[in-house]
Image (cartoon, rainbow, N blue to C red; front, side, top):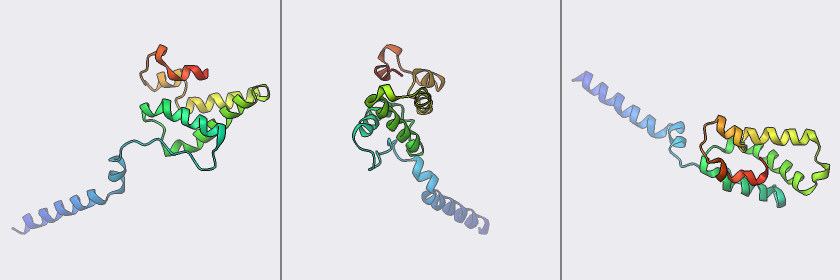
Length: 127
């Protein structure tokens, strides 16, 4: 009888632990694309919205990617506003960030994300 009570107590403790485990509660949440920081405005914010619109379907970009996405938005906005002043070094940085965020067909292929090449919405950005 004593052994049964201890087993039931252990089961209750495990159940309580699972309900309060922060890792469990976070994984149960639905996917949410990170919100645009308040200091991003204008052309940079437009780039953020475009990336969000196209990449939300893959559910890959999270809050952990926010800094990379922010850098990408600033560089892409700079390229669009001043293409003649966009150096090869900046272009290489932009391309690297795009790969990190799965914004290129090649990076999505490597990650085994399926999208028909003809239907690739990011093709219009030249990526």
